[in-house]
Amino acid sequence: MHTFQNAQSGAAITVKVLPRAKKTELVGVMEDGTFRIRIAAPPVEGAANQALIEFLAQTLNVPPSQIDIVAGEFSERKLITLVGVTPEQVDTALGRFVPRAEVEAAKEKKPARPGAAASKKKPAKKVTPKKKVTKKKK
Image (tube, rainbow, N blue to C red; front, side):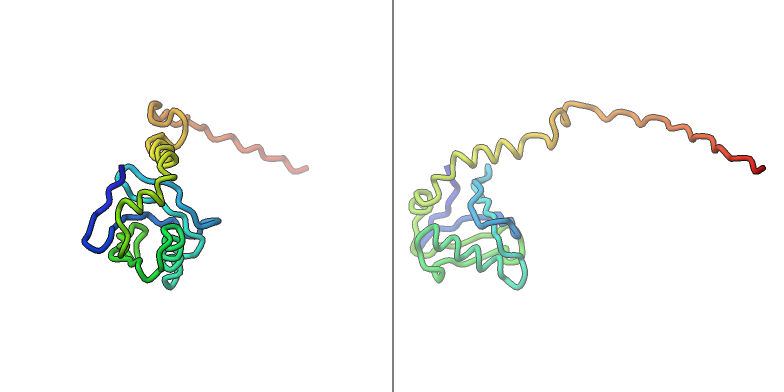
């Protein structure tokens, strides 16, 4: 289940933004309930923040004026308030991404390369310098 904050006038969600992506899309949900969202816009002069607000507005079917970045304006992790939207509405609108979130969580737990966690670092091989071969002048 997601961790939504229920307020008197709306809901709050946390997101992790991945800017400069090929396309804007919701990637999944992290273990702590944070939504991972790829944003095509670069993080320059608020372009990624504006693209995030527009994406959430379209996905949740609310006007952009009801979405506000409360914390993390200059960070990849952001706290977003959704005025006039209940946590249940957020869960319904974004709930189709839950199965993919489990895949994302599993990916984060795996080592970067197979066997990396189990193997120990091998000692470096000793390299002996090659002798220089000089040609004799005639």
